[in-house]
Amino acid sequence: MLQQTSTARVLGPWRAFLAAYPTPSDLAAAPLDEVLARWRGLGYPRRARALREAAILMRDSHGGRVPRERDDLLALPGVGEYTANAVASFAFGQPVTVLDTNVGRVLARAVANSPLTRAAARALGDKVRATQPSAAFNQSLLDLGAQFCRATPRCNDCPVAAACRWHREGGPDPAPTSAAVSRPQAAYAGSDRQLRGRILARLESRPTPTEFAAHFADVEPARLESALGSLARDGLVDRAGPRLATG
Ligand code: SF4
Image (cartoon, rainbow, N blue to C red):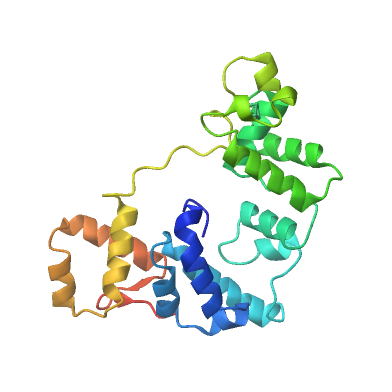
């Protein structure tokens, strides 16, 4: 939920989601349209679908529990390196480095003072972490990047300024050209992401095809068709109708 959605927006829906689905088996048993409705406002609904599919795999292959091992986590639908490492480290204390855009900035500036490829950032993170407790180390770097080493850094207040290579040595900012550092997202208003969210919200009330068409009369037909096509490819919309896929 927190990937590219702010904590303030996530907090309420996250609590409600966990109250509705306290275990993977509860989520696995829920209809997809209900899960999508609870995910509303959090962006990227295909993640809700993937999370439910992951819950089904946990129920069927892992005794209803979240697997501890990174390789088992990576085999879950929708789980990539970042999520697998975050769960392995924060939930189970496994010795892995969590590399996100915040951590990428800190490593490129404070440790290397040089742009880093993703592989180089991962290797450097593993080297700096060494034998330190993984969860505390990863949380520290995430917080340092989020609070101080931002896109516009707050070096004067930074607790590691005395040890930071870029702060000491100067030179061009190595962060923007580092591979683990994300570029700013396009505006949400007027975007295809916003249109996809609008479509899913409208389909929750099960409109007739005529009601659906009337609701989107303001959207250019080719753009609406393209958004419906992408939602269908993500398994979120059943084109016969159109209506929400129920999984
Ligand atoms: S001193 Fe500045 S550049 Fe270095 S880690 Fe702190 S905020 Fe980032």
